[in-house]
Length: 160
Ligand SMILES: [Zn+2]
Image (cartoon, rainbow, N blue to C red):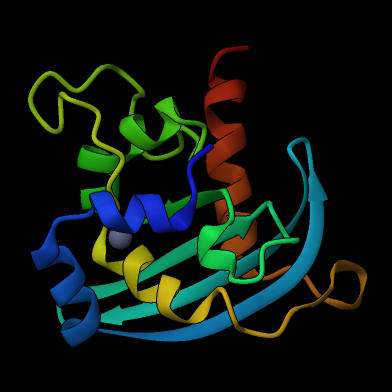
């Protein structure tokens, strides 16, 4: 798994610029939770961009880091850029899951598997490390999370 700092460093400068100039972030949820990879802070955001609204998420797994930008992360975004350029590369490093793409090796888009991210996750990354989080059980599940879970379960169901 890669740190958020490492992913942002690998991200093209123009993507970071678009994150800073075209995106506004509303935090939907920020909780401390646990999954197969361990304890983490899960931050889910609606990212409003000039070309549409997306759902983005970051999970921070190294909660002992003073600045969570230096924590290993798992990320997700609903946009096509993440699907076509980032998902397989980030999944190769364990920093996302195959949700939107077919998971096949990208011969055309980012064939070197550089672990960069999209403007939405880069925009969420500005707020996510420092936003306050509550304990999971005090928080209600959101419609965006249900949609994301169904997408993750979908391929498994199709395989039955
Ligand atoms: Zn995105």
